[in-house]
Amino acid sequence: MKIKTFYILVMLCVGGQLFAQQKMSAAEAETFRNAVNAAAKTTRTLQTDFTQLKHMDFLAKDIESSGKMFFKGGQLKWQYSKPYQYSIIFKKDKILINDAGKKSNIDNNKMFDKLSRLIMGSVSGNMFDEKEFTISYLKDKTQNLTVLIPKDASLRKYIGKMELYFDKTSNTVTEVRMIEPSGDYTKIIFKNKALNSSIDDSVFNQ
View (tube, rainbow, N blue to C red):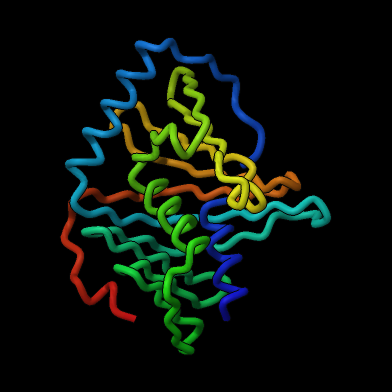
């Protein structure tokens, strides 16, 4: 169970080729960071549909899965509905798993904690920690992009770099890509996003 969950975590966090982007100036990057942080501070809840594509070079077709994501008060739930029933909840110091009715809990160890904080940050967009990442800021006409390279050597064994795509209007994340050192990657696209709508606490029960 722990092995499966660990790879689900990596897949959640873990893009392909960058679109044609221009590097932001220092002033543009600061304005962008401030706007994202301001949006994150006003986001009390978030729920969204997602589609996840896992690309592996030896497969002719990407592996596709989909479901819903819920975020409220530091709690996060990924609920897969296709092609399998699986949910993973980040709640305080626990990771709660429901694998098609088989339930288990995992205490956060150091690597799980790093991955869970990475996932939480990718959802809120608030990941501008230069102590943890080497960060590049890019833009095009429709979206902004941050490229984050982990400084932690143990984390880089699983995640070579991470790409967060932001809508320029709402300054919220629309797509997350995480590229493994091998070149394989996972892309998560958020759709039908609802900000600050009511989410019952029971959603975060196992």
